[in-house]
Length: 632
Ligand SMILES: Nc1ncnc2c1ncn2[C@@H]1O[C@H](COP(=O)(O)OP(=O)(O)OP(=O)(O)O)[C@@H](O)[C@H]1O
Image 1 (spheres, protein in one colour):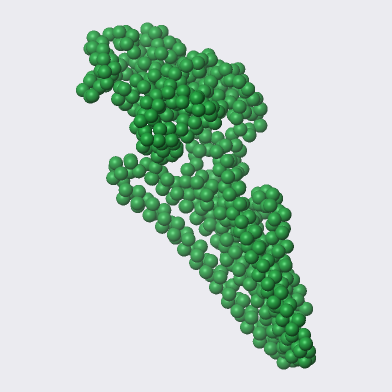
Image 2 (cartoon, rainbow, N blue to C red):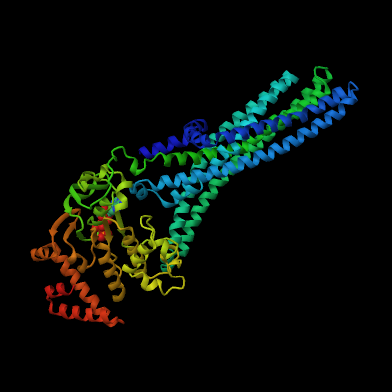
């Protein structure tokens, strides 16, 4: 309800209110480049002043040179005209260069700023915001700012200053004609004001639709395998076409309103010129004005009119720019996660002692997903989190990563409440290996050396060796410089996991969060990965969401999570002996694994895999779980 009301209030904000609320941000952008913009304004004034000389010439020629036979004035007048034209041309060129370049720089600055800001926002913000919307904020919305702060602003200022000067000249030439002129201009300004009010919500809407369409497009292309696999191309085409049509309908309304504004502006100006011409002629016949003055008046009128007719199109750009700026301002006003005032503690060196004290957490209000979770993980130990899907294991690790804050209770790191810790001092001690290895389009080296903490070649090669990345990288033509494609599409699942593990080894975190991959790998890959993980977990406080019996069994402690509560807690041996929830889970998994190994038997097994599989299958046939434990 409140959100809907806020949205309506946003829609009805006038252009003026919007401009005023955006002023601090505009000033922030203008400030560092104010001298260059002032230089631009000065050049514009020189250019416009030079432009004023030209309309004055007919008056001199008609009334003085021809009327008063002062022919000797013709030459100097010609020279002045040439100089004025040259000066105007040169200043115009310099001005365009200066402002266009400045506008581009401004866009880049703004884009970088918005991108940097968004990346500092809390994970909860990303949970509720579409990716496409964020892409639009960074790439599209800032475009309009160029018009607002660069050329557009200077043009508007310059146009208004020139128009003010010219109006003084017009008043000086003829009071009645200028009053008529002002009447027409005032009517036009009133009309344009109403149109801007109508056009602004359309621009806001357009930004919203564009974000949605972009978001869906990004999702659809990144999930192209799934789309093709389920033959969902036509469905995706329909969804996209619907979005593109909504965008088009919005654009048609904007363009129509823009055309109405442009047409009315031109008609108003033409009527005005006709009325001024006829009344001016009557004035000239009655000798209230000379023919030369009337001629000059009409030329000056064109100078006043030009920026006002331009206002119709510039106003549209202005409305678009302000709508974009408004959205940018909205996103910049979201507080970055590290700027919370309570985050004052700095963690110089993290030991990795983690304590949960009666932690309750909810993603959505009044829907807790963790209830009074309490446990302790000593430095250098491995804690395995096991439990059914949706029980809260990932949420516990997300709280350790400080992606969220507990709703109640405390998460302590080395005795310090994580809510009070500056994240920039804590996160470097954190390493994450997600279930789905997330790789960027780049080389193997770039993906392994993703963290900036350890850049030596020796450390890089060592990490690749421990994670068995060298095993496949050495066989590639470009070795570690091989490009792996977007999200690592050119690698196998196991290879991607190994890179992800090498990345964590190189980052050398004190606290490691490991979400074990569930995907079935062939036994050789599996063996490589288990070995890499062993290296990775050494001497770190590790939290592993364990999907494999072997991992849980090797852990120093196991937390059995169910419906957001820790229902059992202990070592593998103690929990197994309890014959409670862990025992049930373990037995179920054992059956699955036994079946899996039987299945593997039928595949092409590596020598090691075959031996291991055979032994496991034999043992499981006996149903002796303890013997299976030993093997694992
Ligand atoms: N970003 C989120 N917003 C709202 N609810 C969420 C969010 N992430 C998880 N949940 C909910 O929180 C609960 C716990 O989820 P969590 O991902 O921690 O479970 P899990 O034990 O890790 O599950 P799995 O083993 O399937 O990954 C689930 O009910 C889930 O729907």
